[in-house]
Image 1: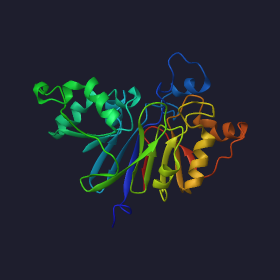
Image 2: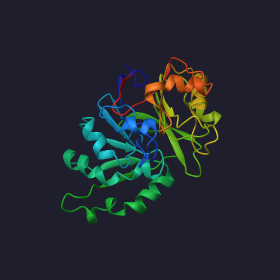
Image 3: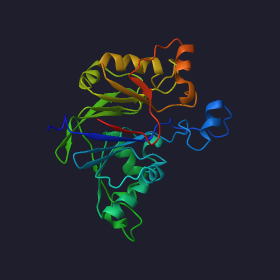
Length: 271
């Protein structure tokens, strides 16, 4: 069985936008529902964990990282792959100390040059063994890339996208395409995503004028252009409500295909 055909389990650790849901002091219907136990509207910052052929890949380590991996029973992390350097994707990096300690290993991390520079500035103590004392600090091994790269023989394809002024990547691993933060996906990047069976993509809100994130209609258009059989929207703001999303789409004159659904925290998908 090839890597492209290898069975993969994807755990959606977080499906929310940078503020999380519920938003602080917000009394909208979605946020009120998100405060109830078991609500799918309760959303932590965006992240996924991928298990494929005995390899365990973590995508981003935001402020909810440690809670996310504990709640979802993540047993191992072999490498961390970063999409970009915004705080909702890197601010939980210090908590890699626990996987490193439990696994007795240094942690390889991968990301765009800009992200590696920001992390080595913000978390400088994690990149030197001089501070690796007492078990309270993880030691990170940084890797940047200029194109496709391999992790333990597994090919990872960066997908360059436009997301404000920050160098941002989505990624393709086998039949999975993961693009949590994007406003514009260039034609060359769309070509790299051809044939994906599972697409997890930014679908922040219904606001097409947002400067750095896709709206639901734009995400659906990309999904349709890729002919992806299964698409989940992530990085969801509090205007998106799991309880009546189809009705919301109807109100916004958005044609919601059957193959497009909302991701939720704790969701497991097998490809």
